[in-house]
Length: 257
Ligand code: NDP
Image (cartoon, rainbow, N blue to C red; front, side, top):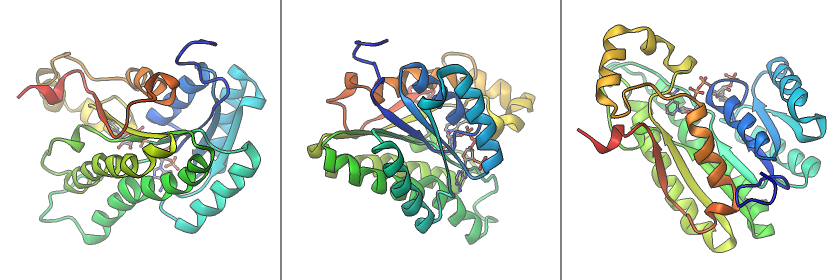
C-alpha cells in the first residue's frame, strides 16, 4: 500500500484493548497497512504473547506494547508520556477498550453503571486527551473512537452501555470541534453486532441469533475484519477532511426498522 492515500508506513498507531477481540484484529490491520503498532492491555503476559505473534508478521521494530488500566487517570498519563518518549509520539489512536454489563436498569447497581461509563466513555476522553496534546503540538493526528449501534439505538438490559456509547458519539464531536483546527481528525466507528468474546453468549443463543440475522439487512453477524477497512481509512490521509463523524459499520442495521 506504500505511496497510496491509505499508506500508514510512517505512522505510530496505538490501539487500546488490542490483546484480543476487535482491537487485536484492528492492530493487525493497521500493521498490514504499514503502521508501527502499539499493542495495549492490562495483562503483561498476554501482551507479550500478542507482541510475539505480530513481530512474526512485521518485525520487532514495528511493534511496541504498553500496559495500563484505561480507567486509571495517573496510569494513563504516566504510560502515555513514557510511550511518547519511546516512539516519538502517537499519530493514530484507536480508543477501542470497552466492557459490557447486561442487567435491567431497575436492577443495575450504581457501581456497575459507573464502571461501564468509566471504561467506555471516560477512558476515551482520558486517553484521547493525553494523546491529543502531542498531536496538537505536531499539527497532525487521527483519533478513532469505537462506538456501537448503541451510539444510536437502545435495547433492553444494556442501559449503561447504551448511555456510554451514545456519549462516545458526542465526545467525538466535542473533540473534533476543539482539535480539527490543529490538524487532528477525530471520528468514530460504530460497529454492529460482531462475533467476539463480548457477544459469544448471544451468538450461541438461537433466538437472538435468528433475531439478529432478520434485523440486519446484510443477513449476518459482522466480523472484526469488517471494521478494518473503515479504520485504516480514518487513520490515513484519505480522510483528512472528515471530522466528528460516526460511521456505522453494521450491515445496514441502523438504517431500517
Ligand atoms: P473484548 O471483550 O473481546 O476485548 C476488550 C478489550 O478491552 C480487551 O483487550 C481488554 O483487555 C480491554 N479492556 C477492557 N477494560 C479495560 C481497562 N479497564 N483497561 C484496559 N483495557 C481494558 O471486546 P470486543 O473486542 O468485543 O470490543 C472492543 C470494542 O468494540 C469495545 O469498545 C466494544 O464496546 C466495541 N463493540 C463491540 C461489538 C461486538 O459485537 N463485540 C459491537 C460494537 C462495538 P483485558 O484483556 O485486559 O481485559
